[in-house]
Image 1: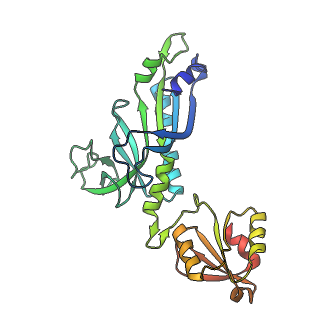
Image 2 (image 1 turned 90 degrees about the horizontal axis):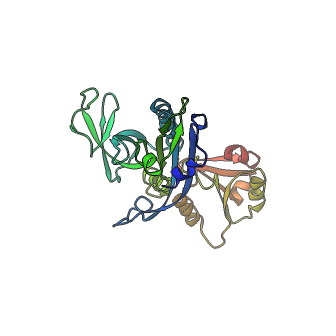
Image 3 (image 1 turned 45 degrees about the horizontal axis):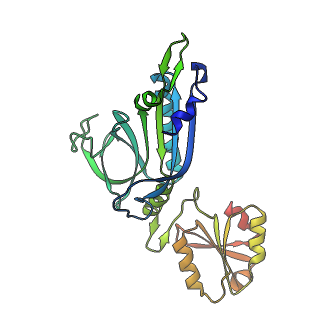
Length: 294
């Protein structure tokens, strides 16, 4: 409702197309039963992306571009996402949902074991067989993290968003909508990337690159040197906490790389290195820490 009137200020001729705009902001919905942390809330953050085109073909080409861009994005985030055919509701005949597989998910998807085609529960006519190849399907619990769909003429008609084509005839714009739930993605990452100790942040979206822990010795110079090199480091210099308490907190927070400096490691001018996703620890020279963080 905001984007269409805004686009009318910049759109007159077919030469002005395509137009692509996005926003990331707080949104609200009347959720009757908010639950599941960041997954189902009344207030949330969302990336809305809209594209306006002069014909279906141009819009459909960009639709494929956005589909592939979203799939690459979720892959970088470490999310096990599948593209799922879904109903478009009042906006379109069909839409495409990006569903992350998760045992705690509230959505149900039927995915083909052979060709990979998937549909959500609401539109599927035969949950046992794939409508594309006829092979058996697998029922999967998922969390929706994104949705794209070609828009019908509703908003273009409502707001009179038209352009003059190459022959001077006024024509309604063809549009596409591409949504990605940024706060929901955070919750989904935690649901799909954790263990009994806490979170395991993928490197692409971790709040810090490394978690530096000092044990009975001042590691502030090492911290300052890392920051000076541009590293994003969470520094645990708390006094009074045991090694076990600091390690437990590090596991709970889930930064990808843990660096421990102690009197024992400094005797060999070294630091103890451990990846959050692994159990083994490694001793490295202090001068080499920045290489590992990078």
